[in-house]
Length: 464
Image (cartoon, rainbow, N blue to C red; front, top):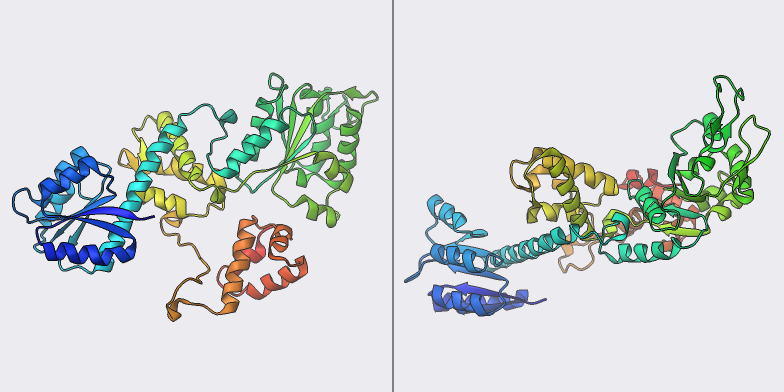
């Protein structure tokens, strides 16, 4: 996209030189001989940024900067001078300048500063839009997001909600699988009935059977009273089985029978109790791989996965990161009574460039910490954890013309394989399918990459 800037300087030769050279950076320059001409363009034209000299006849650059901030606060201003001093810098910043350059300057430096300023402007505009969107209550039971992934997810949930089949929700840890399950329940005809949660990974196997199916009085030590299982407690509503991949093998046929017969016999009981429940299960594991390795029953897998809902990782959701961050900020600020209303563009850039291995849960914790630490009415980059402030993404570099920046073919392969594995959430079965490899070949490559940068994390991650 071509950007349009104003270059304000009474030196016509300087304006002509900047105009000619910035065109190669995709920047259209409108040279202005003075402040009044620049203000006229600001009033009537779409301008992305302005560069102004300080010392000019009539209205100087500092005054122009102040007037621009009043009439077009959305346009970032870079102030340039050959006689820079601390007082001049302070005056320019107080007048609303975005950045400051000393003459003589390299045209490449000016272009990079302009790109950063325009990016800053775009982020500031996006943050305003997202603040408005965060207050929109029309989203499906609180499932915020405008990314294509979230739009597709809401469309799928709206259709699945009207059906009665069991559902398997997959996604990385912290991606919001329980929130999706609650949204599914809230949009269904069962919304007025109970939503009951059982974390299969948090309860010992010896107690899971009693939790699911209930028990009769005297069924075991300390069973002093009869207890209804969660399948019965959730009657008419939804039972959410979180971390279904952790369900012990010995319990899986009992759950399968209960789902097929729609009745359950409590531990130590004689009579069966019927129930009417929709089961929604969730896992961050590759259940198909678990079936292949004999860790999960094939018949139970097919009985549960009538519908499959995949929750996208946060890193694939683009500006949804800022939308969620704004919502978390508002909640934390309201709860703590602290006046924090937004996120600075520089902090927003850091949030967008971080890969969020902990997904929405990690983002929520990050914003809660930042709100507690900030001294301003908006979060700045310094409020974020160091790992987020200093993160630099590892990219496969193939577009450069500089031989010193290019890397060996084996390094390109290593980075690409690890990037695909990261995008697949550590799921080696899915990563192998994307790469066109079988699992054994992928496993051998990961062992070879183990000694390289980032190889250890990828080789350990995911379901093997």
